[in-house]
Amino acid sequence: MGPDTEQFEGRKREHIREALNPANQAIGLSGLDRIRLVHDALPELDLQDVRLDSLCLGRSAPTPFYVAGMTAGHPDAVRINQILASACAQRGWAMGVGSQRRELESPAAGALDHWKRLRDAVPDLVLIANIGVSQLIRAKTQDLRRLAEEMGAHALAIHLNPLQEALQPEGTPQFRGATAAINRVCSELDLPVVIKETGCGFSGETLRRFHGMGLGAVDISGLGGTHWGRIEGARAEAGSPRAAAAATFATWGESTVDSLLAARKSLPNVEAWASGGVRSGLDAAKLIALGAHRVGYAQPALEAALEGPDALQRWMEVQEFELRVALFCTGSATPEQLRRSKEKVVRAQ
Ligand SMILES: Cc1cc2nc3c(=O)[nH]c(=O)nc-3n(C[C@H](O)[C@H](O)[C@H](O)COP(=O)(O)O)c2cc1C
Image 1: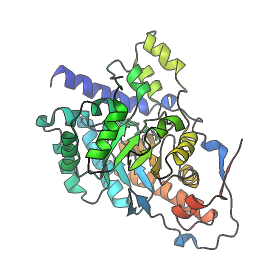
Image 2: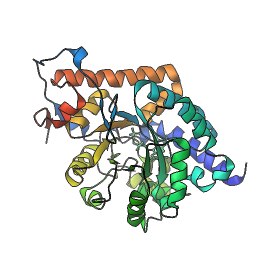
Image 3: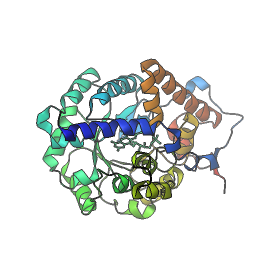
Image 4: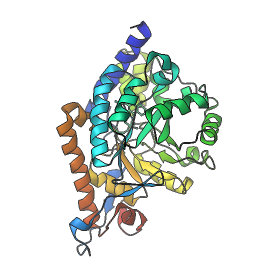
């Protein structure tokens, strides 16, 4: 194992450790606390009639949930991904994977074998490949196509994380040419492209730049959960300029609620996926009522998966049950009914 590989794997392990530290979660900033669903004391349905099926990239899916991309490309990730993938396949959740920079840049090293094996074990799982925009700028579309094909991906997520890249010592804060690169991939790749943030969300102004590109979905991943400014701050040397800047930027970003509302307004014809600080099935219901087609969890799914397959299944069951209860108590038979209704959600000022 060369020094680059060691450094890469060490960084990924630190990211997992720091993501589990509550101090690196932007708790209370998602905007979800100010959203209330309107109680319907007389829902004209039985709880057992409530269905969770919904659309995912234009096709029907058993639930509106997904695990947002986290781990890839290092040995610890293999076990975590197996646990996440088999639970997601079993329960009808989609699954994003973590950055596949290494698979893209050194395919000869067998970096894709793990994904091929995983795909063989879960042939029906909706799996989403993942690459950072600064890698995308230099990547050839044919290499992205090969990456997606070899793992049987249903879509390619391109992640945007300027704050993290700026604060991370090993970061790649080179985003010049990013818009053109995204546009190129959207037109050349015969797979849906999902644009995602990683916990700092989107403004309407940024989202409007994707207009007309033919995106499959936008995953807003807003402020309110895992915060990469805080995580890189925790990794920075105490007293260093990076540590000081990370503290200054600890609340940087567009909240999950604001980002979702901006996405619905700026890109009304693009599927809106909501993640960033989603911590219950009720949070998921609130986001659906605000217009989200799908709702994603990263850190809580990781935490449960690290406890083991049974803990993960229990946690997923809770999310599904809470969403069902919220649908029942708002008189909605499906997530789509809640999403389309304008009267079932209130935003406190
Ligand atoms: C340990 C960890 C690693 C992550 N790695 C990636 C990544 O490689 N690519 C990516 O697009 N997002 C990555 N994310 C960001 C998540 O997909 C998600 O956008 C963010 O964590 C907000 O969701 P949360 O508040 O539920 O954690 C990672 C998140 C965690 C917790």
